[in-house]
Length: 186
Image (cartoon, rainbow, N blue to C red; front, side, top):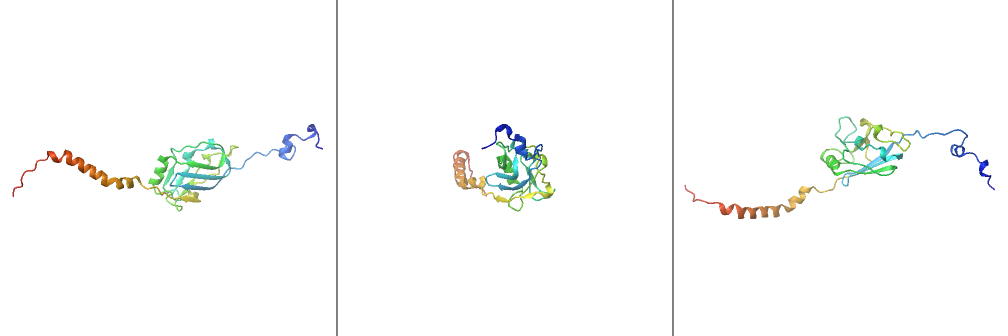
């Protein structure tokens, strides 16, 4: 039969394993890996512990072409994030940021897609800052999906014969009737 409630040790004693010891979480979250989908604009950051989504400063993440200070790089400026605390952040990059990444020679393949950030970019749920990844030690993407989206100019090229025909028809109706051609003299 279990002992009466008042004879049990206090809750603190049960949780800590000793009578007056409490160990606060002081471990800092660290990036385990990241994946990038250039086609859909998906950026997944996987950490070794739960991070506080409300503490994330997305503009401090830096996507780089090489792990050096002279690399071509892009910061997320229009992308925002909401949701609960998690160890795997699934970020959908806004169109303006994605277009900037596609415009520059950065993250065009799994060989030139690196990520770095300062320790102030986010905290875990206990307020511990993330382990910084400096520019010269940027992490290479673990999984990369290339851009397979056709350029919009392809759409216009497909419709170009129709557009030319409409322009020619319009030109014939408005400009040609008003032309007067005089005989050519040699």
